[in-house]
Length: 484
Image (cartoon, rainbow, N blue to C red; front, side):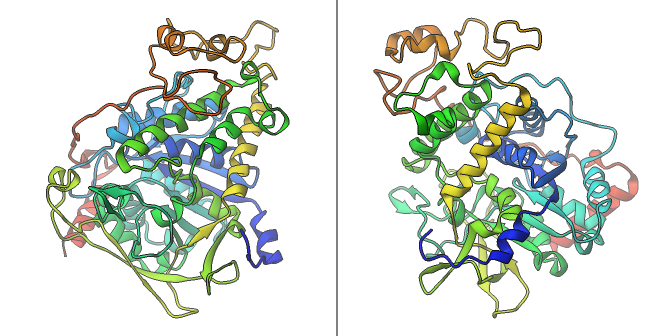
């Protein structure tokens, strides 16, 4: 990050401990947000609420529990939230995240601790955040904002109580940054779900408008849009650096037999994600790994910056007034590109210096941020007692546990055969389709599953999830608000 002005005070304050609640629709990049939130020593993860989005709620909830199982954080409570938007039909993203919402890996374990249903997600969020001292806890939202809108509608006093809200969503476009946002029919695009709209905001634009129009909340909100996340790419070097850890720096030919299951999991997640992003958006350098940035900005704000006279500058704090477009058509015809619509578009207007508004960084230190994620993987391995030979060994000293490998599939280690695997051998033993032939030790990825083309599913909002008649009335008031 050349030319960056570093504020030592900001760096020191960024290392303090923060309590956070994570709201997510667990798909591929959400898994990295969970890893960072659950395995960063600077953070205390109070709990996770799930929401529809990348897949239906049942699947995003299961994925959340499975990722927590994989990283040894079964203690984190998970609460299922909204099944759909406040007033629209739900849309899902099987073309990006697969049928399950987290396709492409054989290393994801079955959850042993189910999600909690003793209370609703909104009340769980409120109780956990309000129990923290005033001005200390953060809410991180990396999915649609349906849960968040209902939270602050039912409990408006919470906006003043929390330290802040960090949101992954939206896209500014119009040269806000130089990040590549992909193409649509050969034209540059700003959105990733429609030509103009990002998926999380498009999915429930009324919820997003409600959240960003809250004056108390907006002044303590940080938005992480596509313009920023598309600077955080999981390149081939990044993928293999995460797979091999310190080996990637120490050896020319790292030993795959020493790779832990948790590293293989996150490598496979990125490999599948890379394939779908290349196919859908013509982005071949690597997939943008959006969601962990909304977590990282809380405890490492020194790694994010605005642009001052063309130079990265940590001392500046740009603020913006946000407008979410709720007019225009919304649905399959828009999402397929048959009809152009600005519904779900995020419009940002700069406020004068010192004014109140949403903070939107323009740049980041990608190398340092990937190092944070690598340190979380190493910390996970140490915590779970993973041996240098790559598989989790039981305390009794038994052989490596292969329970995460599907029946009929050999472990990845057995396929290497001295660093060389042929196309036919790989396909015969796994049923998966590689991208490359030849030696595994040659740098290059392989996808663990071809993308499944699925039509969009829709599911109406189920208001029966409200915990009481009063909550149902609160939700109805919110719907009345967004119709104004």
